[in-house]
Image (spheres, rainbow, N blue to C red):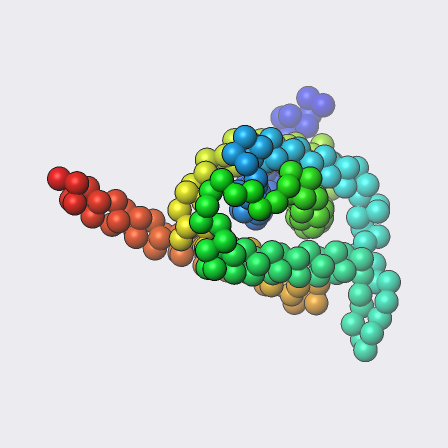
Length: 240
């Protein structure tokens, strides 16, 4: 144990993996923000906490079942030279669900179905079911990424725990900000669509580097930040 704590290579693997898991966790936080925003205000924090603890539990269980995870990448069916695995099926279904969810939420927002904040458009149980479905997809993607970076299970578990703790602290402010600003919510929904397409591409064995997606959303977020600052300045001028 002491040797592990003093091994620079393990520390480097832990810090790299923790940073990567936190970045990958952005998907989870955005989805949590969208889903829990449909709940009554007093239930939203509990739903986010349950969702993140479920994500932590799934990731740890999957890490403890590495032989099963490796088996998910083995072909179960070959069609015209395309080797289909259970991982492809899970990622593909998850991607389709994200595209459906993002499109549905964009439609609801544009049609004005969410204008009345007191109207509850989903139940607590329905929100948790949606969170569980996507937690499974995001957890599988996260664990496969972790397995590809290191074979040390304690390091992987520690990195996952740290990333979930960061997400736990960030979930509420991020969710509040997204739900308070309609244009930011639209960006978040657009990001969900991008992630959905990326998951389907992964299922089809066509990997889209996540860096491209994160750069696109970061650039859009920067533009939106400038818009919000400009809007705030205009309001201040009108009030003076």
